[in-house]
Image 1: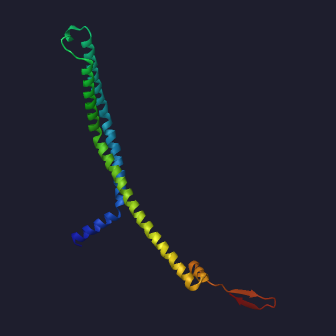
Image 2: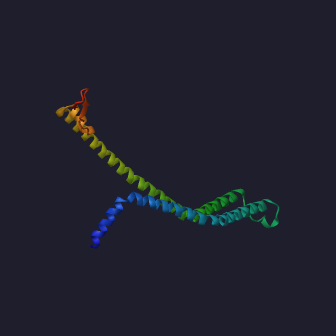
Image 3: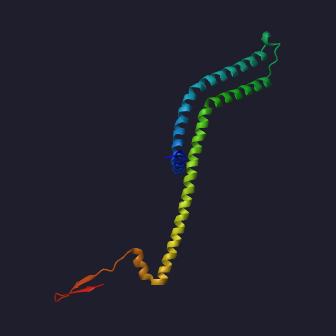
Length: 181
């Protein structure tokens, strides 16, 4: 078998089984997301400890500048400066947390995309199959109407249900039998 023919067969099989493949990838991706998130979680404590340290330093500096401490009298650090610094460190902490969980977020997003792709393909196939079933049903209804018009309702019922005429053997009082349809 040549390579081109093999590639076409493989591509056809992959397209035919695409919903199952996407579903499997989504399930595997979901598992990987959980593992990645679990691996990233212990690092959160370090990030939050650093954040708390920076916030504490800002509060201590602000308090010392507001107090009568002579070593901080020359430095002007206002409430406005503290708010700005807190915002900057909050953004940095958010960025660090995002970078920590980014692999889990990306894999989780791809897993969801895989589930949605599987659903989309199956939905399109369902719609196509429903359309074919509706067309076949309408053609069958039309056929039965033509049978009734041509041969009558009794023949239609006989053909539709696949009935056969039964022979009834009746036993008379004199001991003879008679066949009826």
